[in-house]
Length: 319
Image 1 (cartoon, rainbow, N blue to C red):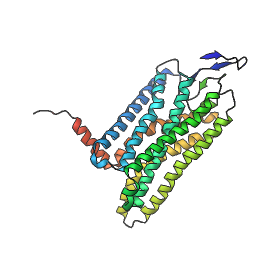
Image 2: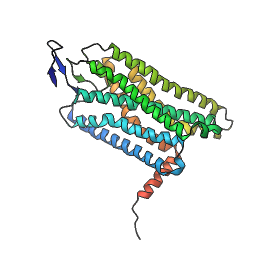
Image 3: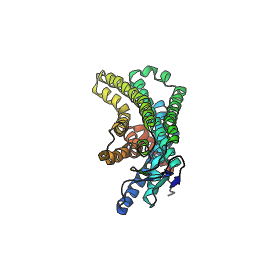
Image 4: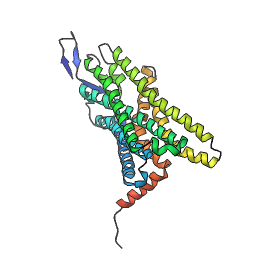
């Protein structure tokens, strides 16, 4: 866990960190292990079903469902970055993670999280074109454009992860090695550094403002135009039908952005640490599970596709 360093006098360099998690009570940990294992399995199963349904149904080969299938894939990746390690820590006394493993986890959290918000922005733009310019929908959202938007989301996520992880290589950790969280979060790791971290905080703040707020503004502007267009529809039935096409996406956006903004923009305080864990569970663990449920409940095509998929999987019983 510790190794001697000639560059730091009378100090040891930390090579492993302890993830404090939620509780040291074995009974509480057993309950949390069962709870988060169920959540993780539902997350994987739900998102895989959404992907399979969209891939198998010809009439779902549209930009909206194309983006939804990629959102489901990102949710699988996002949840898999933190939950398996958290589950492993529930069943072991040594809740440690190597320095390299911690940095890698931070990179994938930032990458998949950033990718998700830009895919949500692409979905917001898709709904904007569908409602505000339906006659130009096929021209503005061709297969090539959709592929570029998804590729751009992954590239921006990679950039966001790299610019925040590369400065961590020069940091030294020599005193406290306890991360008071269930996963390696960048602010929690920076708080343990015994070298200057101002550059790291500035990079995090600038990248968050440029990427996070830009994706949020894209979604916000899209919905300003969408709501304005819906309000101009004269019939109540027409307004309800138009709103139903984007309500599920709006719910997912609110769940993700509100909790994520709170976690990264709240003041650093010891009293808010437990609240931070609870809020981060919402956007990093619960939201990936809820997304396929929300879209399934709000979308008749997905429900119909799920019924067909499970109908094909039923064994044929001969009379």
